[in-house]
Amino acid sequence: MTLRRANISDAPSVAALSIVVWVGTYLKRGINPFFANYALEEFTVSKTEALISDPANFMLVSENEDGIDGFIQVKEPSVAPVHGCSTTEIATFYVQPRHHGKGIGKGLLDAACEHAAAMSAPSVWLTTNAENIPAIAFYLKAGFEQVGETHFRIQDEAYLNNVYSYRLP
Image 1 (cartoon, one colour):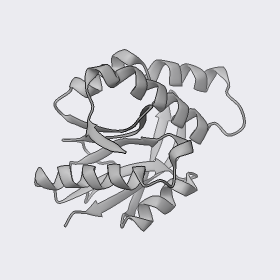
Image 2 (cartoon, rainbow, N blue to C red):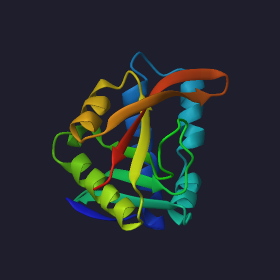
Image 3 (cartoon, rainbow, N blue to C red):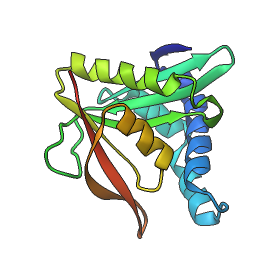
Image 4 (tube, rainbow, N blue to C red):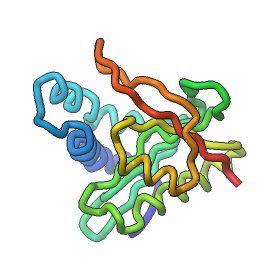
């Protein structure tokens, strides 16, 4: 596993990984046009290039001999949906499912927290779907605390998300 800062040439791989993880995590019973359209419009190469290029974002990728198997995006500043959080958000954090349990997520999260600490952030926050039990267990094991709830919205639909915060050393 090699961790490195994302570059523009990574955009197609990061966009494809985003679709794989998002669809696999949240669409358990099939893919309908509503969610397919969202994923295909949200996780594009051009939007990913913009995220990588945006100075408000810090994106790390995990790379193995065959390609990118995970990434994490830290956004600063970002206003949290609940009071008491810093302005440093872990905006996106995806690891290819077949690579879960190999330390990739821990490595990415540790590196993102080190980056945030180097930027003098007192803490980081993130949201995750309230039904994403594996992610919730991962964050709690890593020392995050649930500090509130919010909703992820796609058009007029709302999905309950938990808000977690982690105080940096």
